[in-house]
Image (cartoon, rainbow, N blue to C red):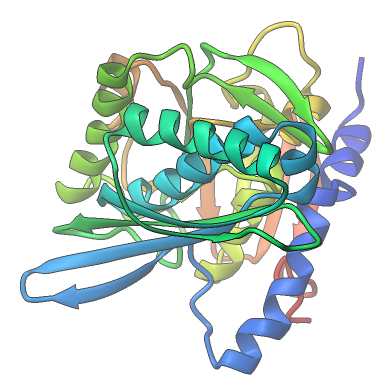
Length: 309
């Protein structure tokens, strides 16, 4: 049986969380202070939502097809969790001919799965490295920023648990999308977009490489809040330890701030396992619990996910 201290230590020391420390320096140079999943432009009565992500080198080397597919998925999630319908995709591919072909095949599957249009691509045919970087653009009527969680908001996690693990380098992917049909994924995406558009979700972030608690810490720091989290309430597949799950990357995993739990039935109705797992707090600490035992995961008044302190 794991202790709370062991669970916290595993999540705190995870590479996916620690590498986020490098973000702050770059954004400070660029004069940006909005630490969110995606950027937003207001155009007439619509909001244009854009996300950009690079796939980790370990994943590109271990499975270039999967890297191509996930270059679509991770950007789709970033756009959807803001409340936008994803429409188009662009990429930059580098590597050997064999690697580029595999990445392109993975991209094609992702575009077909999510119904996106390839807008533009660029290929480096003579690079000394292998990489894929991509972006997705979508449109929204209303956006839920990852900077607007408020003390007293309910903390909701929604994760698709109908998946399987596949470790790709240091990234522990829990993929549920490949077995889902295009129609199932569209229903899941549309439900999130509609919930944001109707005001049920006030702030949100997807669960990504920093892990479940690391992603929550990014949302809290960007919003200037803390949170209390019942770790045993977090949706989790069976036969995996809590410490392993907290540093995993679920392909369809999202964190929401909401005034109530009204969206739970909507999310569950399209395939998510969704629970209220805690609440956002005024005190800038993330306090986690197992049973009656509480522990401090991160004190955001003294430390920073983004390397700002």
